[in-house]
Length: 178
Image 1 (cartoon, rainbow, N blue to C red):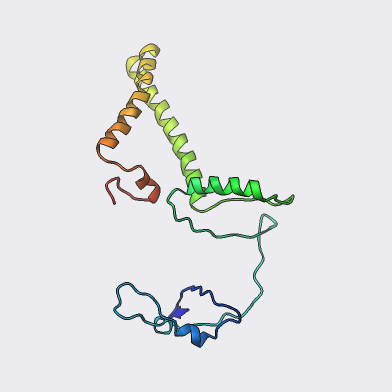
Image 2: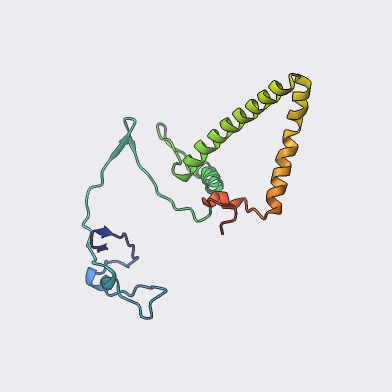
């Protein structure tokens, strides 16, 4: 369907033979705020898609095919783990084929790596500053033993503030955002 310069992909399941575009244009379109249901023809113009040859994409001198999936759950990492397990159980990839997950999962992977590196660097630099102030390895080690307790206290403090840990996975910028 097209509306001005915008193209809105629409999918209608229709029995064989396919319905002509005029029949599809007369279908009602559910709009929650409208008193009457407009037809798809009122929303935009139907464009009949002719069959065409798809493009063959290449990456690193090999053919590439992408399968797009929309995950309803905010926990993409668990979805990918379940998908990998199901694929390994049910599908035997031929030699030379590979399976990759990208999008939000790839962003999570790179973000978690960066977080691990930056938090390690932060802890090491903090301990170096503690040693520079105390000039004693024994007292520095005593301070380092308190780090796990500080982490537990931080988590406990967040729970007192009713912080929802899943809000960070949804992309909320504030722990108090709904």
